[in-house]
Amino acid sequence: MTFVNLIIFVVLFSCNKSNPSNPAATPAVQSEKTKPTVNRELLIKEVNRLKTIFATNDKDKIAGLFKFPISDSIQIYTDNDAYYKELKQNDNKISKSMFLKYFEEISNDIEIEQLNELFSHINTAGLLKENKLKYENLIATEPCYNFYEIEIKNDVVTLSVGSGSNENYKSEASGDEVAENSSEICETVLWWIFRLTNGKLELVTINGAG
Image (cartoon, rainbow, N blue to C red; front, side, top):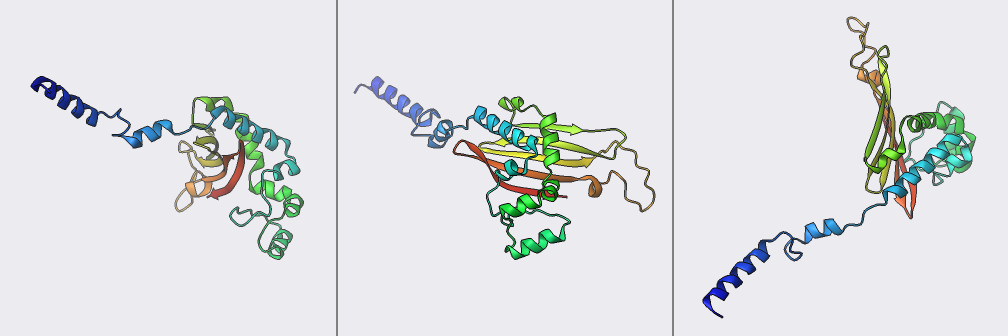
């Protein structure tokens, strides 16, 4: 090997070693690029399927979104003493028959009506380009406002419904009185979390705060 050829060899070896496009040099970057992506159109189709189910307000169809018995990982509250008596007898698990029997009370707690409001305000087609869509129903004369949100993270879809404080509302509270638009009065949220499994969105959990 001549001296000139030796220099060229050394330069090429050095560049190849530091080149970030070299698969052997940057396996982590390559694995990110080759990571399979979730079919967004399929996700939207499944979100629209949920929209259709909620819109029916049919207890049997909505029950089809749950895996029974429902454990205490999904907290459901009602004001019905008979519900809690039966729940205790059922080892704190909600059977399908219980869900159907107390559907009116349960649907209020898990915000079925507000989920229908979510879909009336948010065009799911926008999820083709956006990972999160949100609508806030702000009314100047109201201390609290309702908000609705759909968020996609990989194969997980979260439907959020809740309320927040209207910071521009002029409260009439005085002294030690709690303002009508106080966060402790206004701020609540409920999350329905789904995961795409075998081509279908399956309910993972329902959580709330506030």
